[in-house]
Image (cartoon, rainbow, N blue to C red; front, side, top):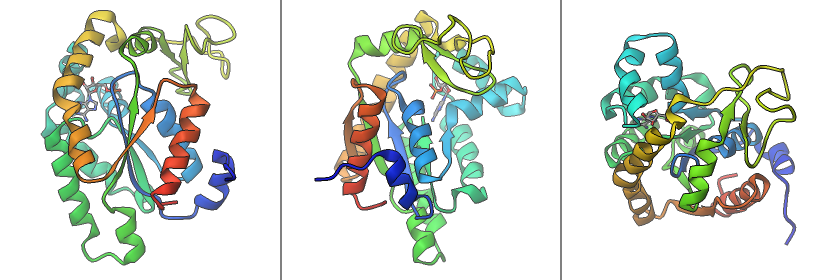
Length: 246
Ligand code: AMP
């Protein structure tokens, strides 16, 4: 069977309705990296609730002020706040052919809310419009615990272009400096070791049940996240083609 590269898939998929895709997995599983690649190929937005929250914290908005301490501890921001934020984002025009949720839902309540919200969004839409907010396809990245720790403690990002590096696996050419624009790389405050432990605990307790939630509804695709970025991407695309959404 012929295997298509993501860019080859991209040529024929950019104008199609891709529908909602959820990236599920523990912190450090590579959700952001893979979501960006998918978004580029499919021509639909990556919606990272962590990024939106960090932006609100930086701008000291009302939401940012409420979220800051919770995020600093590695806990989850209350469902109501995050769901309202996602509801606003899904109304934007760039979501008309679908979207990739990265870091949402993170609790069963958020998943139930999302199912109801997508149901409301489908009301009164034509066939294409309904497909854009159909039941989501969920890609669960499965990664071994020790790899997660290395990915999180080694993660650095460029505050200018958003590119993500890892000092162990994907170091920049000059240590601490972005290859693309020369900006000094930063570590996220919540990638400190004691906060990582809390984030992983929150994942186990509150987010892991979503594997069963989506599995029972026949929407889950498990992908081995312990491979190279390219191999994970290829596996993800093959799986998505099989669900006939592209
Ligand atoms: P992330 O960048 O996805 O690792 O998210 C960073 C932090 O933002 C998390 O540790 C949470 O405090 C908060 N956060 C992001 N997404 C959610 C969500 N869906 N529900 C609750 N809190 C969230």
